[in-house]
Length: 128
Image (cartoon, rainbow, N blue to C red):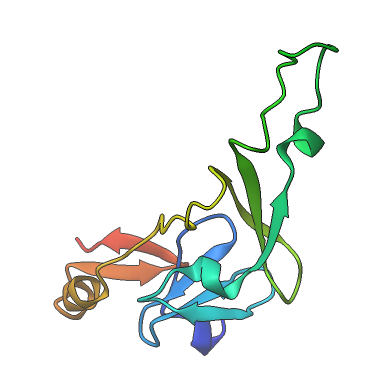
């Protein structure tokens, strides 16, 4: 593993946290997505989709089992470098993007420093 990745933790399928540098990274291409004290989604490309593109009407009537775009939108988040889709949200129109991952970096660093935790193969482990 390259030295610059030794302090990285795999947070989601496509998102890594560099604990030492306090940065989010795409784990497919290594693109920096921003500071880890901020929402990683701010560093992504957004695609605000009409929900009918994903869930087309099943029947031709007023009630067609397709989400109403006046009530919901689908927001997709992509790495701006490699294009991997990192996340998807269903939100009411006008609702701010959710901040779904917020890590107490100060506490995590303290626990790593005292040896309570260690990072091995991009996984956070409890020390024995």
